[in-house]
Every structure is written in structure tokens, then in C-alpha cells.
Image 1: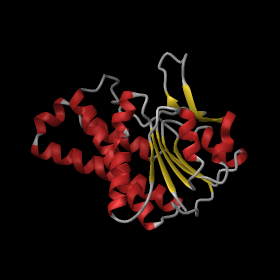
Image 2 (image 1 turned 180 degrees about the vertical axis):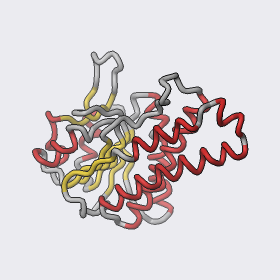
Image 3 (image 1 turned 180 degrees about the horizontal axis):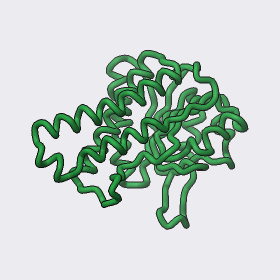
Image 4 (image 1 turned 90 degrees about the vertical axis):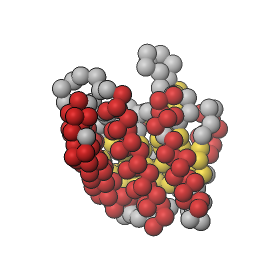
Length: 226
């Protein structure tokens, strides 16, 4: 049984965000657990590598019906990694999609029509939005980004290292996302109250909790992360 971790390389902001995938592979290697980091600008080479693994962790842009190798914000030149057109890639696979919105359509379709064993994904965007609609400050963005990245890395490492079921992964990921943002925001509020209120860190709790509450799991929830 093997785990492949795909990290997007063609979108700069996602490349930065997905750097925790590299740290995840390194940390597991130090503990004697072998995984493969799939990090290539050529989509076809990535697809070949994905086929080799039983469990696939994907860190990339997503939408309701697609996971992107390159996401074009003008929606003219997307490079699709996985969609309805190549669902056979996921046949007999177990998928953890750290991607926006793929639990709306793609996850269920992959399990019902593509032969995917189990699929964990997010119904909503993995978003940074503040409830008041204002653009977040750089400090706010950095804070919430670190909450996401550290939570994902720690939970995925434990799941892979300890051969968790997908159901346990889902439950722990929900809990850890909420716990991390609340603890860190509370610490900032206690020690740096002016900084906390100036950058509206309380909004990060709303954003991360919404993401945590909308993790969906399709297929066999008792499949193992291995």
C-alpha cells in the first residue's frame, strides 16, 4: 500500500500554500514511512504517478466538478488534473482532496461512477473570507493560512503514520481545524489585543469553522489511509 501526495506547481499562491505537502513527506520519511511527492509541471506525468498509489492526497485548486493542475482565473486556459472526463484515474483509489468545493459533485461522482473506494473533500471553498466582506489584511491572511496548513499537515501525518480509517480522519480534521484557529486566535487576543482587533482575527474563527463543518466523505468510510 502506498501514499502519493500531489502538490500543485503552476499556481504560485497554491504552490506556497501546498508547501506543507513537502514537509509532510519529509516528516514521514524521518519516521520510516515512505510516501511520494508528486510535483511536476507536466500534467500527464503527474497522472502517471498518481496511478501508482492506493491513497492519493491532492493539494490544488478545485471546483465542484474538477481538480486543476493549473487554474486560470480568466477561465480560458485551465489545465484539468481530474474531472468527469478521466475519472478512471481514481478507480480503486482512496482520495483526500485538499481542494475547494470538490465535494459538491466530483467526490460523489468519483465513488458512484469512477470506482473510487472513498473520497474526502470539502463542500465549500477552503476560504479566508471575512464575514463583513472586506478584503483581508496581509497579517490576517498569513495567520489563517498557517492555521490551515499546520492543521492539514499534522492530521494527515497522524492518519498516514497510524493507518487511520477515513472516517477517523474526517472527524479529527474537523476537530483540529477548529481547535487550532480558536487556540491561536485566543492567544493573539490575550497577548496582543490591539493587533487582534485591528486585523479582525475573530473572523478567522468563522471562516475556518465553516470549512471544518463542511468536510464530506463518500464511499467506504472504513477504508484505511494507506
